[in-house]
Image 1 (tube, rainbow, N blue to C red):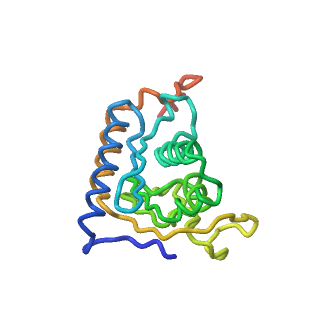
Image 2 (cartoon, rainbow, N blue to C red):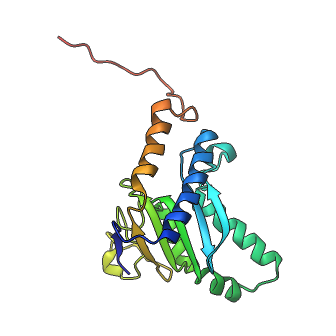
Length: 194
């Protein structure tokens, strides 16, 4: 289950779903959140969408992927589906997200048995699909620590889809300054130069 960067030959459907994920990321940006958005697709239809809501909810786990997953879990459980039926549904879903899922989200996607993940830009600091850890792969040699136990089924993933658009949203966010960033507890000490 290699995670490969995709260049040419991207299907029109993949581009259309990634565009919808970018729309979610723009909503996050408009709400002063880190601009990450996603959609979950089953049988060629968008069944859930999500955007970062960590500042709004004051909950660090409210990443775009977790928002979309929780929406589906709640809906499917309300419909009376068993855990086995929910797992079966997730195994037929694809996720389109603007940034490589972080380690937390990649682990959740693997445990749920998501079929495939398509992402925009890499997540060099926290990426769980190859940048830091390879949680999409069930191959234990892909993990950097021998003590990390991986629970999950793994999933296929492809990165680099509309990455420049995703990066542009991040630039916009960080250029405006993050109004939700914690304020320093003490003043910055500047060294005197001789």
